Length: 405
Image (cartoon, rainbow, N blue to C red; front, top):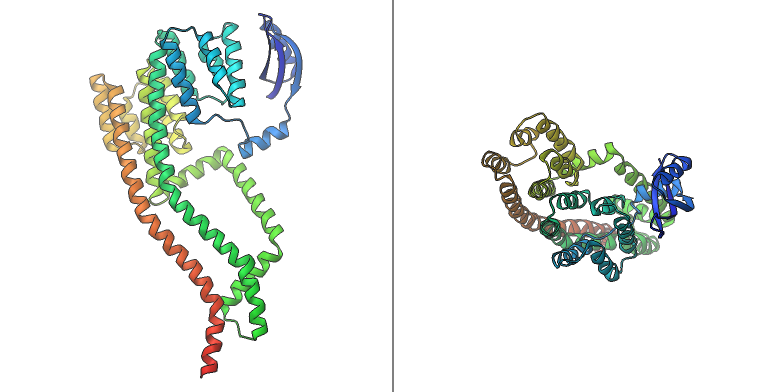
């Protein structure tokens, strides 16, 4: 399927720019004619740039925080009784992000031409979450759009709070690691080559550890361009492999097996699933559809694959709790809560309780991980830097000892 950027005139007479996907140009022209769109300009998007963008994730994005603020404003406007078009006009004036502004303009034009609000947001490719579009569709069908927006805002706040805790916990270890790399690079590219000249003038015999360090430093300094090119190639290759289905699945499985960090990744994925499922069920979306959307919102390919199997089993009539238990991915207490929720008709409440309990588990595990990782990082820095200093000063210490003897 090829992608095209088109400038079209709508049946209402307005001129807009939109992106379309079609097998070829002729098929696109026929599709536009069927919709009574007048094609004014057509440009085929460069497939090479699309491929590079897919590999490096060079695609427009809207931050979760900005999208949360947008929905808070939209919820307030809708609750006040303003029509959707008038609300979109006001929201457009407040958008500073050009990507968000262009998308919102397209949403407004689509709604004005008769499309549903949920369909207009869904047409923006991957710019907006499918969960959001499904929630809007549920609100439109039930006539409770303000309630659905409020529920989605609560969901977004909870997810952002968990993400913020994870990021905050990783800041200090990341700073320590960055300082370690910077210090090692300084010694390898500057200090060790300078010291090698001094040792040669001094005529000292170099121990094996010093020879290895000096040879590594000289090779890195003389071939830094080749090393940089190799690292860049490896990074692009890894990014390409990660984008593939098999690569993403293998990497996400590996994340779950990492000591300490893997349990946090597992709890975070489970939390995303139960909280998303609870939000969708509360919005009146059928359970099977909710399971499919929740599985795709988890953010872990291994979880997603197993949970899609749950969707198939539930569709065949198996209880949700039993299907989740069979995956081995959902904790026992969450399964028990879901079992109670199914039997008592309070599934939404039990999913929320399971998510809140997982939040507490994530807090505990993050505190535990930081308490262990910080001293390990300090020991690692001391080992690496101390080893390099020992390699540098060992020839001098040996020479000094032989002179005194």
